[in-house]
Image 1 (cartoon, helix red, strand yellow):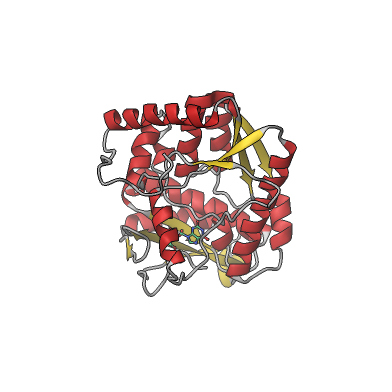
Image 2: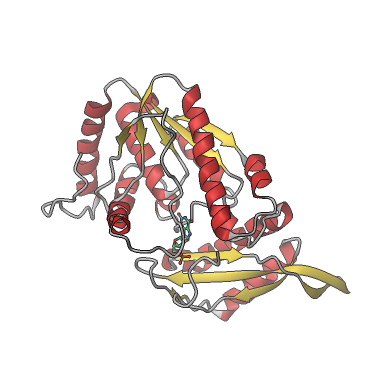
Amino acid sequence: MNSNIRPDTMERITNFDLANKFIDEQVEEIRRQVGDKKVLLALSGGVDSSVVAALLIKAIGKQLVCVHVNHGLMRKGESEAVIDMFGKTLEANLIYIDATDRYLDLLAGVSDPESKRKIIGKEFIEIFAEEARKLEGIEFLAQGTIYPDILESVKQAEGKKAVKSHHNVGGLPEDLKFELCEPIKLLFKDEVRVVGEALGLPHAMVYRQPFPGPGLGVRCLGAITRDRLHALREADAILRDEFDKCGLAEKVWQYFVIIPDIKSVGVKDEGRYEGWPAIIRAVNTKDAMTASIEEIPYAVLHKICARITSEVEGINRVLYDITPKPTGTIEWE
Ligand code: XMP
């Protein structure tokens, strides 16, 4: 699949029969392209990189080397899920790098959102390149590029202005020259999910809500501190748990917690308790260009508020953001 243009004749993959046909074709194509050489993949645990990993494992097994960089800004349990699924269940060649300290040290005191994004993106390239240099005989780089990414880069080449710099992975350094392997680059997201399930990936992984590359880094507003980041991760896990329990997780496009760098006075155990507010955001959208608010039932909001304020150290209030996009963007930074 060398062309970057989806042919008009390409059938939309809507069921397992079509997905299995696509998988068989790609397995053959990957084996033809790669031969007995090795392929490197940055496996974030997002839908696209996970599906590419599963496809390549099926095609070339241990010739694929997956690198999972934990930047310390993942949601609760995410890196563990990558290790369980790919390292243990699928027995992939997986290199796990815990770069939490490295990232949090670099980000300390940095409050400008775009500077945070730049640091997170640049550091990822550096860590990934360091690993790539240690490995022998890698000739290919696999990427989870999908068709909307290609359409988006065409738009950017035409000079359309972006509100935020969403692109997380820039080019690798000059000395690392790999041939690209992009087996899902002509697929739309819904097709990627069908292919993922046909490959046996868990439903929760394949239908995971979108998560920005800079992760919790753009939801721990301003300069990130370890204690506030920890509170954010715990509060976000409670929100996700409650959304799972009441069926909203299946319905809402993106839902998450934000914690700003402000404290207010509260009361706990009959004493003054200064804490951060946890802000809840739940939005629906088709293309992330505009978004509407999910009207979370009050009973669910009460439960979330009660759990977050009692279970998470440092939080004394829960707020609910009812702003659509525009005027708000989906993320706060
Ligand atoms: P905004 O905040 O621009 O977000 O309305 C639109 C969608 O993009 C995601 N987002 C990002 N994704 N890197 C990413 O990969 C980023 O830096 C980034 N910033 C925002 C956001 O989560 C939403 O789905």
